[in-house]
Amino acid sequence: MNNESQSNDLPTTQTKACNCKYSKCLKLYCQCFSSKDYCKNCDCNNCHNIPEYEAIRKSKIKSITKRDSSAFRRKMPKDQRKFKNNQKSLIKGCNCKRTKCIQKYCECYNAGIACTETCNCLKCKNTTLDEKKDCISYPQNNEILKSYTEYFNQSFSIIQNVFAEEKCESSTEINHEVKATGNIEESYFAKILLTFNGLT
DNA sequence: GAGTTTGAAACT
DNA sequence: CAGTTTCAAACTC
Image (tube, rainbow, N blue to C red):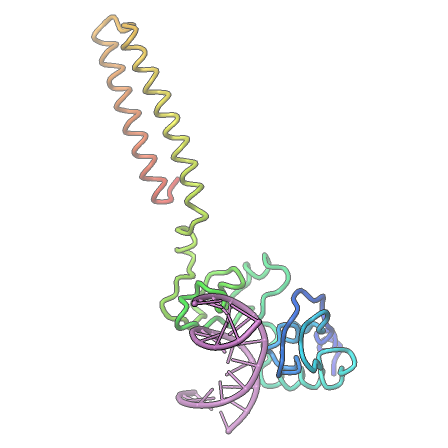
């Protein structure tokens, strides 16, 4: 065994406890094992994914890696930003059929990333296009629209005051204010359209 | 908390 | 390689 594979078999810092009952935590079903972590503070039965069973554990890792060299590289790494930038090379892609990739059964959704062309899912709604439409973007749009409306109302009230106080003494000035009102309206509705089309 | 659903992993 | 079974997590009631 070379140094590189040895270091890859070393357990990393555990991030999640498992509840395995039948796999002895020596199959990829086990989240700890699939991350090459030892089980610690888990609620598993007959656990063999602990230092006491290191020989068996390493043997299992070896046989699984032999069958599929990328078996231990599919799960979400701890540095999620790195994963997002390099997701195609790190994940095999999901095969979701029923959940539209919008439930945590989906590995991609669970990892907080959009499905890609490497996935083989059906009726997928976990796409980058949908990310723009999700609930997170609506409050942002609402804030933008709110600011446009405030600006519009302020501008309009200024013009109304000008008319009300009869400050426009010539027809040229009246025409100018009417045109300004129209420009503000046009600008306001144009901004709304741009906002909803995500072009601001 | 028990039962069901789901999709990955393992097996044949 | 395709179909089936096993498994653990997510979900529902």
